[in-house]
Length: 155
Image (cartoon, helix red, strand yellow):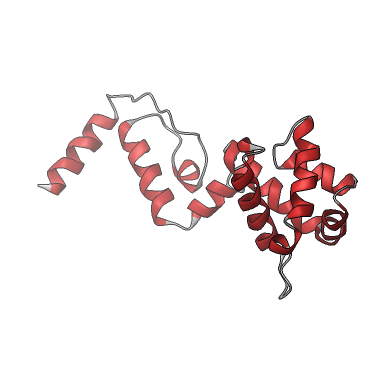
């Protein structure tokens, strides 16, 4: 039965064209770029059965990053690149790196000052005595933002 289904699809591939709404990226598009039902199926199977899915979501296989992925990466990149400066400025409750971090986290206008005060107030939770890393600092900052209800678009 499966062979008949596949054979039927192959025969239809030459006559039926599908409007392909896929993004046009990943290893599957290197295998076939025709717009047919069978080629769409071949692309899906190729992309799913190879390790290209991580490349597809990270943007290295010719795929565009989704805006959620871009924002998330921007947050962690900023946290990693400016970790020590953020540690110092969060303790003070002010500074250019902290202001930049607030903006990266989605704060606007008066929220930037609220963000700075919040991180100073929650410094011991964001930077616990037993140490932390940029990823943990970012998560602790997001938790503090969530509990205070500011900069909602970053969470």
